[in-house]
Amino acid sequence: MDGGPRARSPEPGEVNAVMFWYDHDVSGWGWFAMSASMILFWALIITAAVLLFRAVNRAPEHSHMHGGPSPEQLLAERFARGDIDEDEYQRRLAALRSSGPLTKH
Image 1 (cartoon, rainbow, N blue to C red):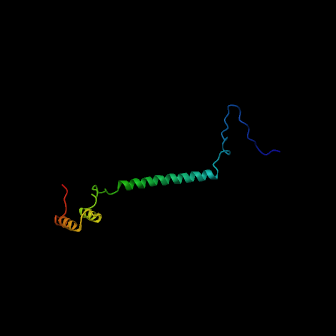
Image 2: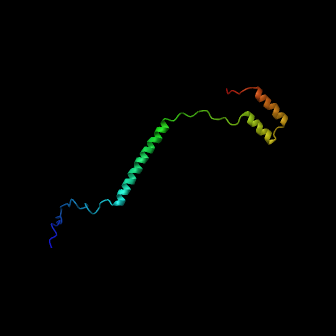
Image 3: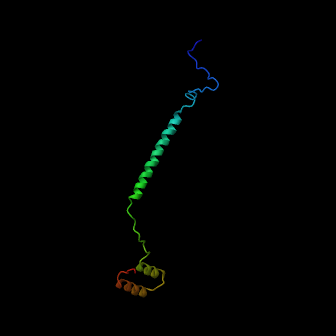
């Protein structure tokens, strides 16, 4: 029963160079995991590059903030709550509109 040449056992102190050649190969799931992780890695790199590019090239936002409701809106709210009557509302509204736009100093 000679099945061909047999691999001999290594001598003490001798290293078997092909020890892991067949025993620890990457199975189908290993290839899948490596492929999926490579795709995920490059997707993260590309996403980070796109987000960085968009952040750098974004138009500057306006630095002024909206100051809240206008004086006419505040007056209308006071009238709606009943804090002032209709005559006072009309008088103050006319005064606001006749003074023109307010300027901040």
